[in-house]
Image (tube, rainbow, N blue to C red):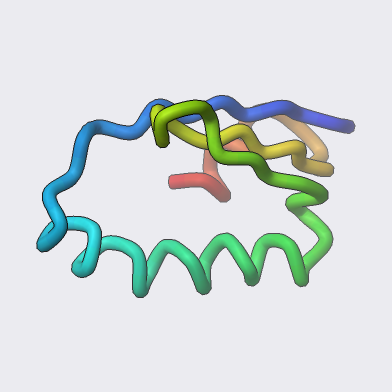
Length: 66
């Protein structure tokens, strides 16, 4: 099943971004390498992200993204 997950990012300070991204980027890459995430895009003005996922259910997508 293909699922498009659309996330909204809260504005982050530079310090929050430095703390957040070192864990988030490898986790996103791992989902890609595992074949769960096909494509991903950043929304305009860094408002959020869009993930095109290949999963068994919407619940699986939700679980993987948490």
